[in-house]
Every structure is written in structure tokens, then in C-alpha cells.
Image (tube, rainbow, N blue to C red; front, side, top):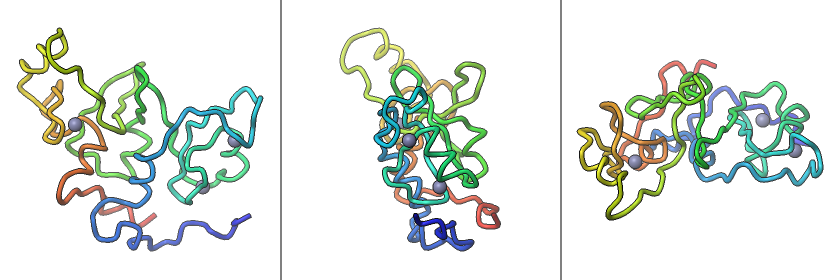
Length: 172
Ligand SMILES: [Zn+2]
Ligand SMILES: [Zn+2]
Ligand SMILES: [Zn+2]
């Protein structure tokens, strides 16, 4: 019942000077798509939501949790592509500087991956293709389609001085 904990207007302390918002680290470390413990047996109880404005526990929650507890908060919906978590660019571009991160069009929406995806090692068509790509993730080496620097938000976080803060982000 922490209804009073609406995100304070100045949340710079959240980033602890690293350029990475605290909630982003939480987002990248959260496991999504499990059934919600609070709503077992409900049809839409898959935990695929994440709140930017409050530290929900657990961080991943379902459709019902959202309408009960985060109705007025900024909530990101996590989606899946080939068993990997993605978010729509339109849902994060206002709160995060995603410059340099490869985006993909999936189901006619532009998305980006939350975390680095394990890559096939050794032989195989994918590995061959990766070697041939002129663009690679600076952190994990994954081949990229376009001249971006990172395959995912998770790789961008690994920069020594990552910058995710938008100049305008604080004014909200
Ligand atoms: Zn729930
Ligand atoms: Zn919330
Ligand atoms: Zn990468």
C-alpha cells in the first residue's frame, strides 16, 4: 500500500552518476513472462509489464497488477521475439537515449532487444554471416544489420561511460 510513492520529480540520485537510470538496470535484470503470483488462473496473468515510476516488487507484473497499482504510471510492455525480450522503440525513446542500439522491425513495429543474445559458436550459417557483416556490436561482437554500435540495451550499459539520459527526461 505505498500509494504515496509516486516518482519524485528529481530522480537524478537514481542514476548515481553513471548515466544509467536505476530502473534500466532493474529492467535488464528482470525475468519476464512468468505467471503472476498475485493472479493465478487469470487469462492475462503473464508478467510482461515493467514500471518506470515505482519500484514494483516483483519488478515484472501482469495486466491486472498494472490496472490496480500502476494505472497512472509510465509502464513499459515487454514483448517477445524468438524467446528474447524486446521493447518497442516508441515506448522507451522518450525516457531513454537509445542512440547506437540496433533496432529491428518485428510485426511492423520497431523494437530493440533488452539484452545480449547468446550467439552460436563455431560453424553454422549464422556464424558465417556474422563474420561477413561489416557492423558488429562493440561489446559482444554480434553482427548487426545496420551501422549501429550495440546489439541491445544490455550491451550499451556495458560501456565504461554509458549515456542513457535524455536532456528532456528530467522535465517530466
Ligand atoms: Zn498480477
Ligand atoms: Zn508503478
Ligand atoms: Zn551486443
